[in-house]
Amino acid sequence: MGNRLIQYLLLALVIAFLGVFLLAPIFTVVGVGLDWRLLAEVFSNYIYREGLLNSFKIAVVTTFLVFLIAFPLALVYNRYEFPGKGLSHLLVMIPMILPPFVGALGFQQILGHYGVVNRLLSYCGIPAVDFLGGPGRFWSVCLIEALHLYPILYLNLVTALGNLDPALDEAARNLGASRWTRFCRITFPLMKPGILAGGSIVLVWSFTELGTPLMFGYNRVTSVQIFNGIMELESNPVPYALVVVMLFFAAAMYLAGKFALGKSALNTTVKGTAGAGTIRPAGWRKFGPTALFALVTFAAALPHIALVLTAFSLRWYNTVLPRHFTLLHFENALSNKIVLPSIVNSLNYSLLAMVIAVAAGVLVSLAAVRWKLRGSMLADLLAMLPLAVPGIIIAFGYLGMSVKFGSAAAYFNPVENPFLLLGIAYAVRRLPYVVRSVSAGLEQTPEELENAARSFGATAFTTLRKITLPLVFANVIVGALFAFSFSMLEVSDSLILAQKAEFYPITRAIYDLSQILGSGPFIACAFGVWAMLFLAAALAAAGALLGNKIGTIFKL
Image (cartoon, rainbow, N blue to C red; front, top):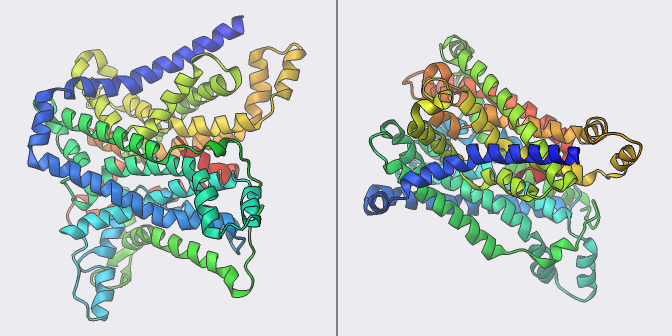
């Protein structure tokens, strides 16, 4: 009885934490912004309407491009055995080692008026194209977001395909069904949960993305308009209404996708067999899938390649490759007064976020999977909510709470010191990764050892410490790696909540450096290279520990 009481108290503590730092910011924004006069001003103002329309178009186009990239890759990976298949999973993660707004620094060098693409076009006698102005800017934003987000959908599709039973396809083929019929009647319906999980995240993420449009100077989108309105928040409440409208449309897009795709009734009765039903092409054809993955990987890595070349280039103007290389930008980055403090700040914020996310995530997973407490499903739902609620909305809610409560929230004032606020904000945003990772480990671990320990008189705490947690230790480490590494490069919270230079995290420092005329973008690229290498190491470690099941981290 005592153990059960402690379990319920821990669960109540987690739910209270999520209520204060997840639901309260959302309700704060809704409470102020849900005013018909403010909403009327948003919809009557042409600039705000255009921003909403542009955000919606970016979301739709980006999601379409993501499907064009991820769907064939997932089908090929599931269907064929090919050279380098084991490495392909790691290569697919390359776009995730850098926030797209940092990659935009490198992409500007590729797509600029005197950049790589226009130089290649000039060799072919084709006039230069303005990729970073007019309609070209829109397509550039969509492209770089798609190249960053396609791994999320790909990993969900591979996981969904891995759960299919090859016997169903074999039975349909024996009955004379064509390959197209089998795909439409069996494979695609059973993939719907994976499509929903990945597609919903991509749609909402691209609709609310702040960093990429901001870096490209594409200001007529709602997220950038909200960011630009922060400085006059106390005198102008319109940004609150913009956030409410964004939240409404984000939720509507998620629900529309859910109702459109539905959930196949068969997916709960099907269990795949790893490696079953795959085809081994003969001769030169076996390199076809390898070439496809290599081509997509190269395209996705272009922003990273350009970022690295820009960081090392002394001059890169109207040429395909830089003419001279230097380490000067790395030296300037080290000597810049905001660079080293921002690294220390990010380490502090991210370590705090990791501790909070791991503690809360482990408790939520234990309550839902092992303890099976009443209310655990509510905690699991709240823990997953940050995947569906845009980060900019949660960050803006924290800012609104600090303005609304004033001195009562002195410890959570981003102007005075955002340490606690940013640490908690990062933790809430990355909590789903910890919960999904630990829950997957618990579901795959039989309870017999724990039951045996309890039958021999071990207390619940001893069983948890000596058996349960050691069995899922790798999953806990993976969740902690994701929480820490993605917190180091969090964009929305950092740009909105870090108000003073002395408290800047890495991403806010990179943004400020990129705005300096002259050498600023080059120094920012050098700083971005360090961040890219750091996150690459963390993702490689997570991939090695979790293997093909890494896609479960990005499931709703």
